[in-house]
Structures are given as C-alpha cells and as structure tokens.
Amino acid sequence: MKTRINTVLGFTLAIVMFTVTASAQQAPSPPPTTPYGAPIGLEAAKKVMAAAEADATKNNWAMAIIILDSTGHPVMLHKFDNTQYGSIGAAEDKARSALYYRRPTKVFEDLVAQGGIGLRTLALRNASPLEGGIPLIVDGKMIAAIGVTGALSSVAGQIDSSGAQAAN
Image (cartoon, rainbow, N blue to C red; front, side, top):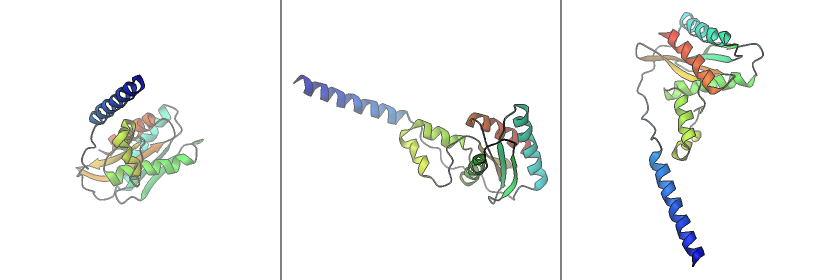
C-alpha cells in the first residue's frame, strides 16, 4: 500500500512539475516583418567590418567575422590570425540565420536554453542557436547580416552589435 501511495504521489508531483515548467516557458514571438532591402554596398560593409574588428582587436579576441548581403552572399570575411578554421563556417551560419529569420541568433539561443517547446528550434533549417548573428537594418529594411564567432557567444554578440551600430 505504501509503495502504491508513493507511486501516485510521485506521478502527481511529476505532472505538477511538467505543467509548471510548460506554462513558464516563453512562447516564440511571431516572425518579424522587416522587409529585405537592396544589398549592402562595399563601403558600408567596410564600416561595419571596421567597427566589429576594432572591438575584437581592443579585447584581443581572435574571431571570424563575416558580412552577408541581403541576398545571402558574402561581402566581406575577416579571420583573425590564430582563429580556428571552423569559426569561418560557424560565423557564416550565424549571419545566414539572422538574415533568413530576420532576427538576432540570440533569440534562438534563448529558446533552446528554455528546453521543452524551445528545443523545436533545433529542427529549423539554417537556424544557428548561438548568439553572434544579427541583421543589419537601415531605414527599416534589412540590407545585410553579420556573423561573428571564435569565443563565447556573449563575446560574439558584443562584437556583432558593434558592427551593427556602424551600419546606421
């Protein structure tokens, strides 16, 4: 009898915990409606890259930084000396995610960190669940995206924000 009560109590507790956890999860926001604009020009991309490079250099971070135009094609890439080669593709994945889904990749990282329903994010094609990708929006239109990696995601997020600020 005691075993049966413990089983029922354990089952009830599990249901309560699941319900509380599920209700506490943040629902994903609807997709942004920011329109795609004309692709970023080389001079504007140079300004974005220079700002991102300056932040990385100031902090002595070896990073890979890429800028994709609004069509998803690379405009600029900078791999600092001694940056691991895998960071090149990871930076491009972050930029592509920001471009395709019109939002910073930090959004995906936060959804995955929630667990539960947020883990569905991992099934999205070209959605990097790591901070470091951000769309570049000028005059209300997305003209490019920047992707950064090579250190902690929070560091990449700081550098991509520096670059994005230079776009305006």
